[in-house]
Length: 408
Image (cartoon, rainbow, N blue to C red; front, side, top):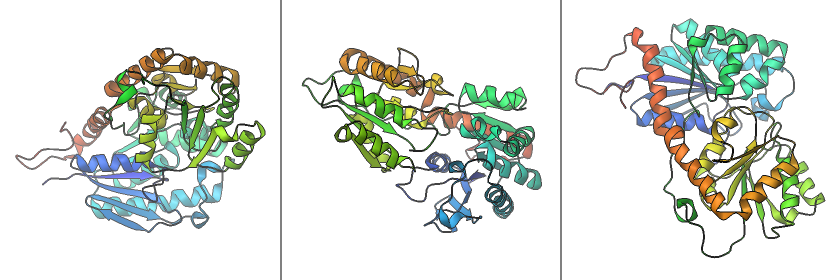
């Protein structure tokens, strides 16, 4: 059977089933394999990983770079770490070129404009393959603030064949940084979400007996996430809902500070820091929570919000980046500025006090996710981009066989 080969490039990829960093890259790879592709992933090594992993038609090729044994992550460092970024890019290009040529990959799809898109762009030029880069948020919102990375972002945007923006805001940002308007496609979400089967209150019917209210946050505990704003709002919420609980899923170097904040406000017993959890368990928690909270100073298109909406949860989030593409004010949730603790408390209390409103907004979010954010919709659009870029390369299926480039 004809199986076209794709090379995915990303500097972050999950180490195991419980690791959430770069999980959407793995999810996309798995879905592409299911759609009939052979996928080769080029990614940076992280502690506890091997250089190569293979599972059916999904192959992971990892490369070492300066500092990988210490688990140093590019996004957690201030400024432009030249040695780390330089070794990551150069060794990534070498691994990508070798992988593309050895396995005859027909297209390179990179995640994050820098460093993934830069690696993919140079590798594509060296191997004469079309290059797609997905802009996820921080790559266009943060990286261009520094001279060197801004230059690298502009260089990448000028030379890739297509950029996929996960939100309208990122598309406009890319245009400002030099991307031509005919080379950008907006696809909400890097992979889309698997729509769950909803039960109980998520089918629009409230619980028949009183229960403790619960809020859920899923994400990193690092800047620019403003989890401190959510905890501050929780301090006001428990005054009216003494049994309310905030579950925080995720980890990061700000966790000790956030735990200290909850203790200092006297609400330690109302805030649970659960650390990273398996994806399946997170989805189950979304089915059981009352509403989803998210706060950040900048964003691309938060996958966690997409999944929460698919689970029928109304959302209270910050009005930044691509969030307005998801959270429609008064219809699927509410938006507040990142440092507005009182605003967060006010909107959360509004939903906790009004069950019919909460269920209606949750149902609206679920309907929107089904129409715009489902994995089926996203993958179909992505394959159209692939097909458009690859058709002049002579990739065709054998006679009588289904061609995964264009198959629905």
